[in-house]
Length: 436
Image (cartoon, rainbow, N blue to C red; front, side, top):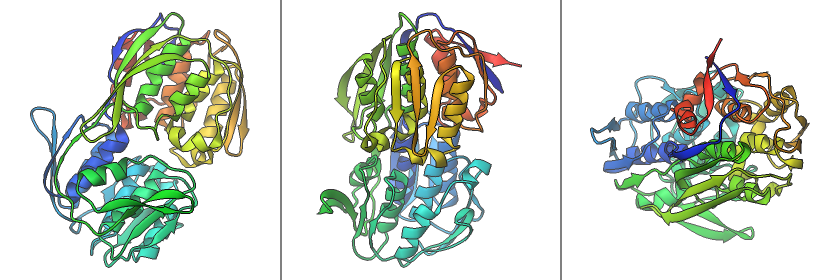
């Protein structure tokens, strides 16, 4: 489906983005590994997360939505042999975390995904899990692959990349391993797995090594609990940036997760001159959440530090859109990971920005955007998304403030992370509708 975004009236009102995708995946997986019935409030019901729900069912858990909207996951304390292939769809998080969790059990499971996921590297989890004792059948270390699990031993793994998916896969495998499992990474990645493991009763702490504190897990039996899922800060980024670049706008984005390892975009927007405030509180498992009040702003170009990249890796596409409307140069580095997401996001963003009249340049690990201030972006292009939901949503936001409408060539995949995106944006005053 093609979608077209036209210049918007000032945005007004309130929006509550869907539940956080990272927490939703983890809540289902840990609930399935635990003994008893876990309750999950606010689960993101996107295609990616529903694939994870089906995966844990195939592995022996029960996962169903109750009449009050709460999800209930009944686990038996471990996984069983699945009777069919586990289809992870478009989700690298589902694939890598489930492969890690399955590795600890004496079973063989075949994992697959869509064409985009089949292109994404799996060796980053195959390597450490193989060191722990799991075995894999795969071609070029990509999906489809078969995991042969069981009889793992704990390791100290120094990951070459800062990746919450790698870290989580290793820690989940460590729940069934003999001895300590420690994960060391160059920069701290999001820590939802560590936080949630504590809530489920895992034997997890941190150790001081290589000049930092790193997670350590031991063999543990998880206990069922209740999880609350706040709104996804990566999804909240789209209405936030839309309000910043659409003149005379003021909106409130409600109940957004503000984990300090997920707020890199918001720190960067503040440095660009964004006018927003938040009213913070804490959710039942200790994750900070907030309502964000956003007003349209004159932005300036910035150069965020490379070490901030892990805290905003999913938000780089929408940050590039904000940079297009800023005055001056924004240089984004430390984001080579973007080349192996659902698409090569660096290349697609630069191509799309140039098609809309923005001066943009690729870097090996990022991009440069040279903005000319508000009302400077021509737009008028049809954007090639390559099936990437964040590319599609980012350029629809750009079209809300550009001189000419912007069309994305495929919007169906937006449901993988933000079901109801169009309804959410139009409720605030956006003009986004099907075309063609």
